Image (tube, rainbow over the protein chains, first blue to last red):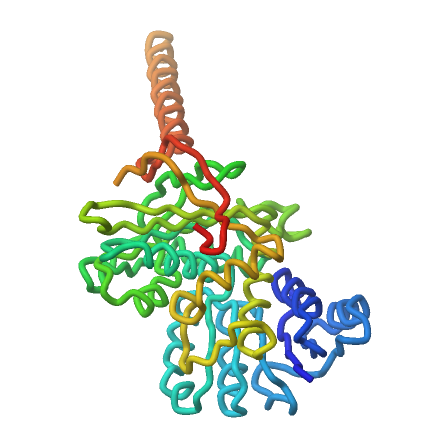
Length: 329
Length: 53
């Protein structure tokens, strides 16, 4: 009987839990959240296969868990991942903030030593776009540059992370070395319709996960769209961000010529992130084919096999698109 | 006294005009962004087939 522990029942965690319940290979899910009211409400809504438990980051994992799925605010994942590695349980995490990702990447030797796979940045971008970058890169003989962009956010914690990423100094991967810079100004990025063109800014974000996955690529850049303005209504009622979009450009050489492949996705950000998190969690638990058993702390550009991963997401309604037209460098 | 007053008003009006024009140009630049991460022509096609290409 495959059991998943879902920690954090915000916009992404709730959707990931729903997707896991609907996955045939998952028999039971345990739910944990610091908000007891929200926890009880979600557990009731999900029926007999879901059970609310008293678990907080820092606690030892309950027994008989096959996978841990975390959708927590930035920086809260670390004790959960540490406990999971100690217990020999794989983890799928939606963490996307660069400092927190560095802390999780520092656990890589521990995860490798324990033979445990830890997937981080399991969302729309990072996450799905990393898999799309891997998919696009397989069509090139050599890849020179990867550019990733996202607009949209999945709940208040995601908005806070986007705001933070956009205002702090940036680390970019340029000519195979890290370069530090002040926050850049915005530039227009074209996403699939109906999102269209949006102002985006280069950030550090999950660039390191892409560099881990594509160490030979000379330039890798990540951009994030402008978050919503702070208003009294949003402070009071929150903002789930609704529709979001992501886009990945891969530039390189194929058939002796310089060329580019552009993939994009439009979906409600929390829905896409929840589906990605659930699929990775189910693959880590061995409940979905192909199972993921590559030890270490990795992003999805290294962790998943893109074609079956995209096929599973398409079945769940999250579909990617390719741009066909004139791409300008 | 009256002449000084009218000169001050004129300078103030010019200042308002300059600030207004600068604000309009800034707003236009802000709305238009920097541009330049095209593609600007073409369309999107859903990935399909066994290879998702």
